[in-house]
Length: 183
Image 1 (cartoon, rainbow, N blue to C red):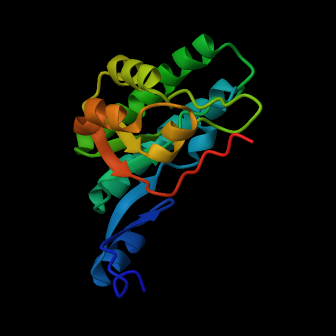
Image 2: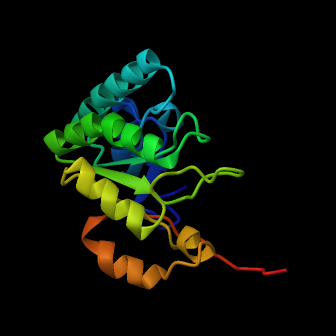
């Protein structure tokens, strides 16, 4: 259906070699593939967190070898009520090995700018300031942006200015309508 309707890429959740082979057999490619349980990478339990990071590093290596080129994630803390500065430090610590694995595999890590659900709006990378800092602090060429102007617009951020600044690091794009309804 995707090929017949003009698509050349589709996004996948967790992609296996069989998934990637099936896409190619259908004349398609993956737009992005999700990191494994990306909402649980920053869990509060250190042992579970270590396991999640190790699982994702191995997954990046495996999926990249199968042809995946962009890995999708959100930077969501396990405890959104903690101080943002503490969660941010944990995010850098936790995502650095995954970003390094992406660098080593020559693939991109696309960070989604969805601000998160209420009441905390906890996603740590959703505006220019946090993207700038996270990209700098990870220090990996693989770290980039999933450009989704709908989230920027609803936060009152100039999505064109954002694109001008981050265009060299846009690895993936989401497109959908956005309408602000003040009432």
